Image (cartoon, rainbow, N blue to C red; front, side, top):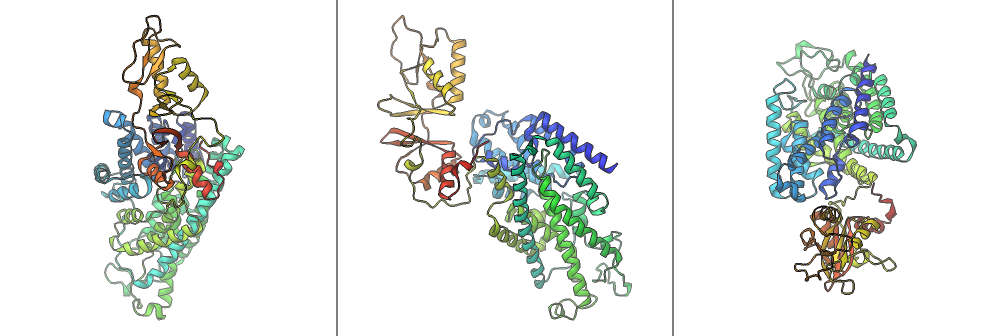
Length: 605
């Protein structure tokens, strides 16, 4: 029955995604990062994506696959933000304002997913947003506050808390425990780097072989394998969130969990604090089961993330870390119990004292693995202590998060989201990296020396037919408008979409507009002889202040302009004469060339 239900839920999810909203698959964070950097993926934040993603996310999580709901909830929140933007002219017309709303929506999404409003704002700032001015900060804070308040009033977990994994540890940590915490950080970094490499290799294989043509079959097979492997082990059979909650838990006197089956010595029990005790048979069984669960989670998550169902990465990464942390915590606890006379334990861990908390190790391990995969630091630590309520454990969390980031960065520079952006070929300029080369705008602009001249439109000498033939022969998203072909003096820039719509409307609604009608982008048009066809004035769709740089502008400045303003193209002039154009893709190819990569490997699908 377990396997049947799992297959039913996951098949329903993948069929809905495939049939109605192909964009609803995956986590959505790489695409949102790309959209916030100024690239438009049409339909990615639409109402169909929102409806299908909401339904299929419930099905995918219910099917017992190794995936989380947090990343997709950020996508869902951004869909809501985008749909609301369409109701207000101020946001509908202005791309930059809309991006600010999406930044705030991402913060609200994390706030709802984790019950961590401040962590949500920091996540949006550190991981998702490209440009984050101060006013967006407090707006995001307000959005996250309202989201957390709404969540609290609904009380989804029934424990009148915002968080799922609320923990109360009774004992403070000792300075010497930083050694195992840093070991957990190293494990998190190694696992993060291993996961990113393996997952990207698998996703690349899916893209380049026939595997990608059978998404339903792939989901069916992975779900079947997951369900068959998960069912015999109680720690993989339960939902991942419950598993993490149990691993974070500190054993009390009344706990019936296998993890708490210690040999009780009731003479030494003082009040609520249980001393470190010898592990009973239940604990050893639990350790074996957890070790098997760890191996299964490590490998099955590689194949699950990136399938055609909504899938987040936060919860599976935290589960891997929490299992590793709990195993290490119990090991250290038993070591301290049997060898309390060793020099490392003698000063602070006497016999009969409660000095090691395995649940704390699980919490630190979860933070380390999540940091290794996503390369978050500040927002990760804040999310973890908001999630668990463990304020005095900030230092262990910080130590583990920083170690895991350093270790993972030493093996591979990119986090999982940046790696997926590169795999999918989205035009995304990494804002965190410096551009230190001495090239100029003229080295990057097109047309190059042997290329055909730039396609331009003149301001008052081209007919409707001429402009339509330019639109049909080229695929550019816009065209520079110049005074004349001879002078090449720049007047402005006109978008392809606006041209097509304006000409179509004019043919339908304006009398006398034919193929020989002349298009004017000027303020005043000369009087026409009575026999000639009426003219078409298109000054209203002309952008009179396109972004321009001179041919001698250093590329360092150009790259900075593209990053800070989220530009898609920028015109290059010399003494007011138009020389060429630089698009975001040209900048990316140039950076790839300077890094000795194949510039054509940057595909834009």
